[in-house]
Length: 497
Image 1 (tube, one colour):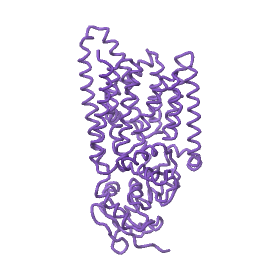
Image 2 (cartoon, one colour):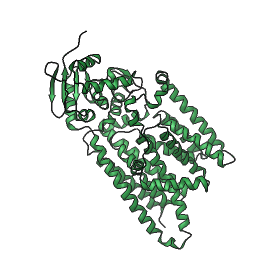
Image 3 (cartoon, one colour):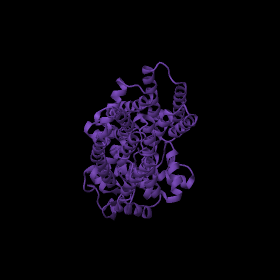
Image 4 (cartoon, one colour):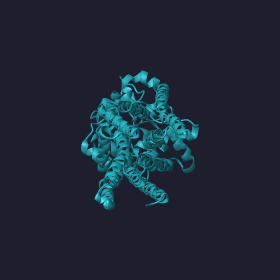
């Protein structure tokens, strides 16, 4: 019988291993992932003014942002110690690895078996989609997913006053950190329905806590997003994304893709646990996990959250359900003649997980860091910062918009935050047209419309628009001022009517 100290060191070892692998991949890339530069700008703004950049003079050449600020304050706090880039590489990975400890505590609470809790903690460290998507992107989900899991753990022990207070306080933190708080309250409401169907009485502390958190979350988000909701109405649910790209964000669930991104072991045992506790077993704590898994599945089905985000949540939620399934399985094995050979089952299970998920996670991480900003791109952006006059407007792809504002510190035409942007579909089409147009007059006319001074033509633009050069660029109207892997043109002409 192994003691508590062994499991303490084992969990610590898994934490260190996962963190070391994450940081190894994160520092393989010299710069951050493209998606991290919105966080970079907010952290820099907080360090300078103690406030995020809500009134932004660079995005869309001037606009207002609406977003919850807590995550960026956490990153900014650590950036005072290590610098912004290091903080955005290290802190999100530390937060993501905290999920390992939380899962261990949660599964032990459910099963009272430390060996199963330890294996579940190991599984939670290598959910491929979560591992790859939170390595170098400063993803907010590296904070919100562990936070939601700790809230679930607190809710399981809500009869204890200390966990009740933590649940209420951290629910407020979640609502001030991300709109994923709506998923949290949706899951709690589904939990109430499941419990009502199976149990005659509802725990009063649970009911009152859920009602309080529901109204708190709604109140905070109404205050924060009231203007955006009045501006966009129901389009706000899909972040006012242009119709041209909304299908790529909110994709249909593909079974093979789901197995690859979540892992075979969590899916198989998670589904088995849901089946057993839906039809044969009764346990309110497992119903809580099932409610979260069901809520994510429904949101994915109706395309109300993006596929990658949904799979991240679903993959991590299946891990404690896997622990429940293993608890049932080993309870059965212990009653049979093969109980003395349980170690062989553990060996097969660990090996199967390593080959099906750990190697997949490492491969996905290796692919993910290839999307990081290259040194050639960084050199071009620094040239823009030093050479382009302040107030210049730079045309780039929409995905590179925040990069232009964060590193070059110049105005962009458009970026990926479409909230409070009117006619986002027209903006999207006209950015594409400015790159792909064959007619110089059309391109110049659109550039005059957006006051474009420079065109940033990168390998990303070549790949996205499937072009090798700007067809209309000539020496008369477009001066090539930077000519390397990235090309930068200065716009000289205007169309007069």
